[in-house]
Amino acid sequence: MYERYALWEPDKVPLYDPEKGNAPYIETALLETGHKNPCVIVIPGGAYVCVASWVEGYPICALLNSAGYSAVLLNYRVKPYGFPTQLTDLKRAVRFTRAHAEAWNIDPERVGVIGFSAGGHLAMTGALAFDEPTPDVGDEIDAFSARPDHAALCYGVCSLDPEITHAETRRVFLNGNEDDDALAFRFSGENMVRPDAPPLFLWHTAEDKSVDPRCSIRFANAFVSAGVPVSFHLFPYGPHGIGLGKEYPPADEWGRLYTRWLDTLCR
Image 1: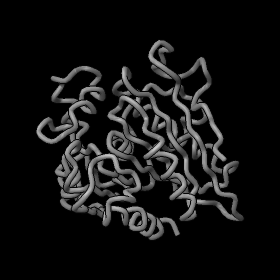
Image 2 (image 1 turned 90 degrees about the horizontal axis):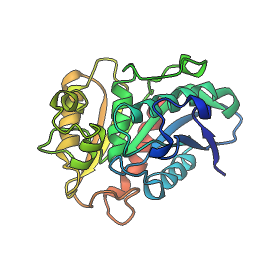
Image 3 (image 1 turned 60 degrees about the horizontal axis):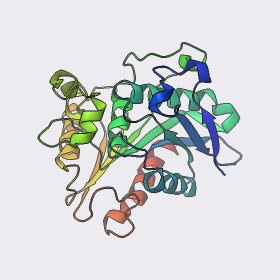
Image 4 (image 1 turned 45 degrees about the vertical axis):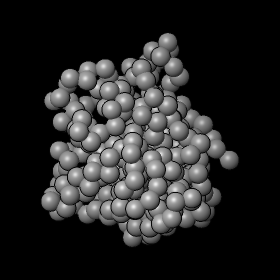
């Protein structure tokens, strides 16, 4: 049973314009156990134009629950919103989860993120730019850390390099400023890796024609060069946006590999 929560009070949502669509919110899929559970915030893709919860949201929450993890599904703002709105939403979701850890039976020191496609770019941005100034409201929730404890990117738009990126994701994130090469460089994963980055899991398929697998390859190489832990899997078959990948073996193994990786960090 999913419970829905607004991330801010209606009159306090940063950057909000009712003419641009609904305010952001989360849906929780929490485990009822006798101990505090690790939790993952799920960030579906959709090129920053929509939130593809039907394939990269609810099924992923179910996967996490089956593996012993509580899940929080983020419904973030999309087009015509651009940077820094999505990052503002994700930072608030991480803080909101930690602020409610006691009530939700969650361990606040084991809160990670997983993102798909453009949601992968957002997960990456949240993991590596968690201290980026955003127009927060300064309430008690904003006092909690926005840094995820771990991050996973699934066929993510890890780079905004026009040679390999997904053009629509780049365009919307840049808020229509397609020529803002400095901002694109700054929020391309290969340029963002830092020594205090959280552990990373990422996977892609070689057949992906929408988001070049070189996005993930470059990003993984940057982690290796920086000496930060990374688990990278490149599967031979499967198009973009396959979610759990059930029809595209061996990519259908990614969920098992991911939850085993999580167990090494959270158990």
